[in-house]
Amino acid sequence: MAETTTPIARLNELIQGIDIAVLTTVRPDGSLHSRPMASRAADERGVLWFLSHNNSEKVEAVRTSQHVNVAYADHTAQRYVSVSGFCELVRDHGMTKRLWQPGYASWYSGGPEDPGLVLLKVVVQQAEYWDAAHRRMVLLAGFPGMV
Image (tube, rainbow, N blue to C red):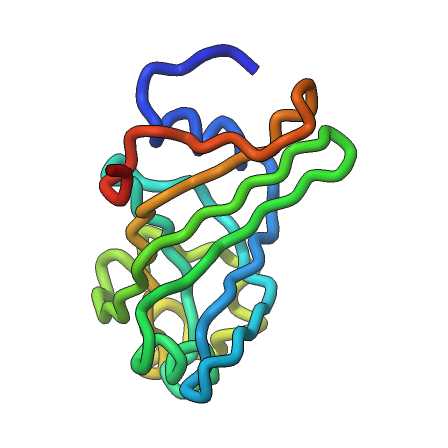
């Protein structure tokens, strides 16, 4: 992969073409729960966006703890990325329309105007990726959570 100039651009390069991410939340009892989510690139501010039903378990978990992890895997190319961050619940119909893809209709019958839709806004605090040549995870420096 070619070198890029910003951590957000590098993250997007690493997750490009990976259609499914695995979102892990913390349940109210402290246990972790993971589920697949449709993936897309981080926006220019380093935010990952996901759509969800407002009454889902993941939304309830985020109401309790905003700490989440998003994992990406492409076994063929040996690309593995782990992103940790803080998740906010957002209702923004304009953003929902921008993020909407036709395939979402099977999950959200009301389309982008579905009143049960909520956005999960994951602000990236830290990202790591698998460096196959050195057989280890490498920190992707430059995100707000970095000290």
